[in-house]
Length: 264
Image (tube, rainbow, N blue to C red; front, side, top):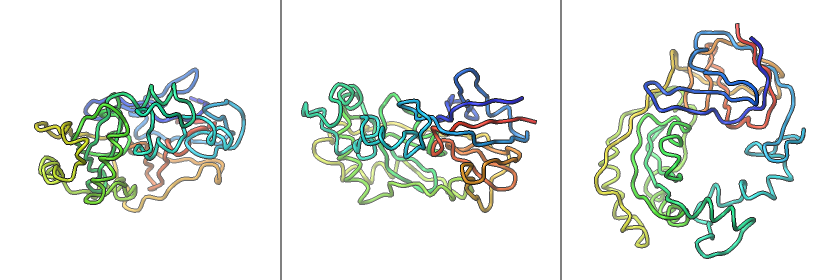
């Protein structure tokens, strides 16, 4: 079977294990069903996820001109503490910024390569944790806007990591942690503006990924540079495809690329 389309973040379904779907304009693939099969991938071209033009992708699936213009790529996306919609202050597009920023957000702890703090919209739980390859996670606070979540994350990352080591995550060389105990220890460091939103009583969410074989020394696949690649799919974790030869392919970081995928 031969498929072609623009890469976008894999859709997920929270089940045991997680179900993954690669969605193209006219087709979709249940990636779990491809475990143990050989995939041949070929780089075809680019299609910016905003303007749709065949322009080289700069970041986050967008061409350079779109990246520096559209609200979906503004600095507050990656640094939520820079959010200003709650002040009725525009960055790039106030209507869009209000829609995204002025809704419930979660500050959480996730264990993917280590315990880390992060921010996501409430509607993106547990999708955000799945995308990060976390095998366990827990909410700390639920706040009414992105700014409060951002300043809480900034305060807490003085005491806990805010980044994931992708190699450690993919090797699955991860210890289980008591995230309830972590949450309790961090409680005193929550900013005053967010203290009332602390979640007193909840439990960890555990996540099981569809992996037959974890790589001992994962090596990233650059499909643009190599042009094509053939390998047997043995696992999916986070937004990574894991192959038998220990190559790994990050779908998320390759959004906007047009690829052909042949399955045998």
